[in-house]
Image (spheres, helix red, strand yellow):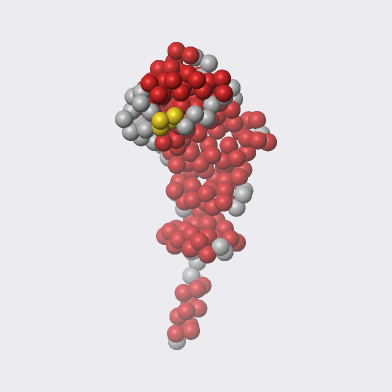
Length: 219
């Protein structure tokens, strides 16, 4: 009787209510490194719950970990189509396009668009702000990179990477007056005790004098 009951249970076809089950199964298989099983479970879950943006985003991340970047982008964009306010999907699309950028000039523009959208929606996302600043530098728009770093400093003044990048920006901004203002703003902070000058040699003197004038140790 028990065998018959088990066979009956296994033979029951999946229904829409089984979507979360297959999703959980997919995550379990993925954690165990059972890639093929995880992939099949993800696809089954998506077939059962095609309008679940979170599920599609998780699948996109799974694909990206497998190195299937273009497939991951398509899935992340589907997730975004289902929930246009899903910043996690926007962020993933941006990072995936950055991965593709070295061999695809269009990808850097798409990455820029994604991180500009995050900047507008969530300027407290300091990591994305820093990424956007690097994109601007990469495409030769130093002034915009400086804009982003100054904004990031407003929202994350204690973030060490923001302070470091802003100090670097002083050397390549091309706007002497603005660069000096940013440097003064940094040096006025009481929680900065030392300045490690990692800029071209011709710029060492001005930064060293400014830092010493504020009582900072110069490295």
